[in-house]
Length: 95
Ligand SMILES: C[S@@+](CC[C@H](N)C(=O)[O-])C[C@H]1O[C@@H](n2cnc3c(N)ncnc32)[C@H](O)[C@@H]1O
Image 1 (cartoon, rainbow, N blue to C red):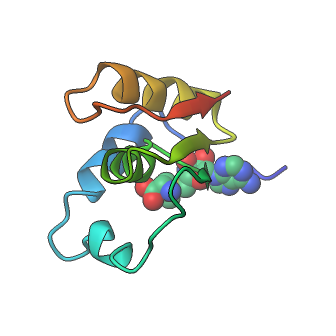
Image 2 (image 1 turned 180 degrees about the vertical axis):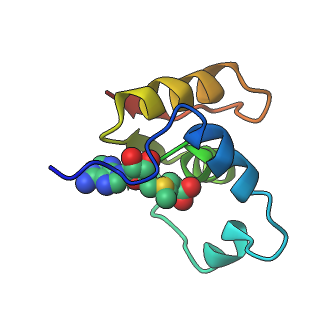
């Protein structure tokens, strides 16, 4: 399998910062995304997990699962989801 070109221990932080870029608001991209109540979502290639955390907060009755082929990214995303101030309803992250 080809390695992710931006694989680096700082990639999670880069993705978190990117998500704050006012010129590209991912929450606007998801404005018309309305998951089924009590549905299950899988965020494939979740990176830092910022999108999964957003969906989990916005749709607290959804089951959000996130995965990434980088174990480092999953570890860091899991830390953000369970320890960060932004996540009252953390998604479960697959290794
Ligand atoms: C550009 S980042 C985007 C992260 C996140 N989706 C976001 O929007 O912030 C791409 C992520 O996808 C992961 N990825 C790339 N190919 C993958 C694959 N085949 N399976 C799982 N994860 C993958 C990378 O490790 C990386 O963390």
